[in-house]
Length: 107
Image 1 (spheres, one colour):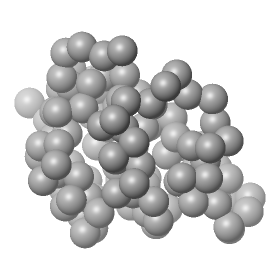
Image 2 (cartoon, helix red, strand yellow; image 1 turned 90 degrees about the horizontal axis):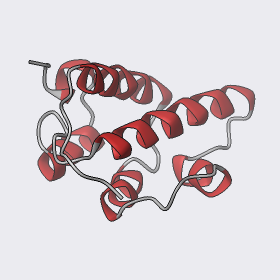
Image 3 (spheres, helix red, strand yellow; image 1 turned 60 degrees about the horizontal axis):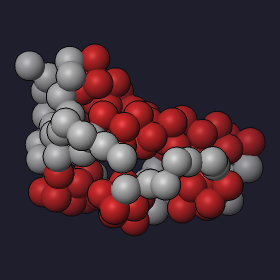
């Protein structure tokens, strides 16, 4: 069993995510979690080279196979996530994906 997302990182945005999608974001599909992890990694890289990036701008510039409504809602919640919180969320998502903690189904 994996730890709750707030074990890895806790901010008001992460608290909102947990309320909407479960303490381990179990209401997101594996595809959504993989997409979010990819977007957060890209966001961190771009923030490192140019401070002005937001997660929403990364989504606009990154090819994604039609994001689900859930993933779009997650992106809206995390719009201005600080880099250290993004790192913690990547860590939580990695643990959740490793242990198969995601809703079945997808696109």
